[in-house]
Length: 256
Image (cartoon, rainbow, N blue to C red; front, side, top):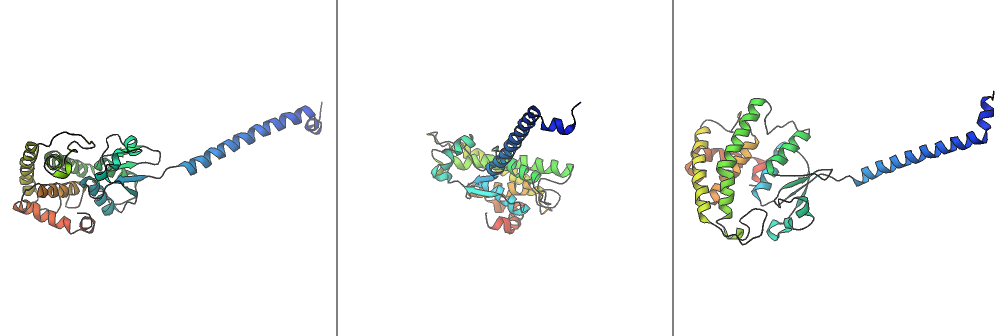
């Protein structure tokens, strides 16, 4: 029987050991290369927006109130930059803002972006609510404000102002004609909402749990839209006081 030294000195065994060593070296090298590629090739999360757009302002206020940091890239939608490549492929809805994650996934819609950032950040400020009841009430007010005010007024503005001619339908450049009937319907819908909002805010500083939430941000921009299409928001006394108090917050002052 061969001793260990005899086996170690055997030419065939030496070749086999060298072969396995080479295989292991290649595997380790490939893994290291993959790791290096993943480190160097990893994308950094970016938020694409246009500062003047209300949808971008909603996210901007959220970021400032929660102290969440994210790289921001400005796209000039007035010049149609969001309709060009690579942005058109990245975000087929062709609207801003949109968030590009590290892995290339794109999330659009202001509230979806804010919710993702809140869930994935270490911020102690939770503008979507801290318990089940708060979360439900904030969601309820967000939906009411968006469905009856923010979105109707958004479309009302696009059907009224000269700057939106050729861009009546969001994310497009078409010859679709503006229709003032849409604006008039939006105004009536918003007035009904503002009456209900005014009643709710008679003894409150915020919409839910007497502290700021994303519903307040949505509500603020609903009143801003209402003001711009010609609604006298001062006639809704409690809602107007609430609006003015929000306007004094540092995060709201800089981007109102």
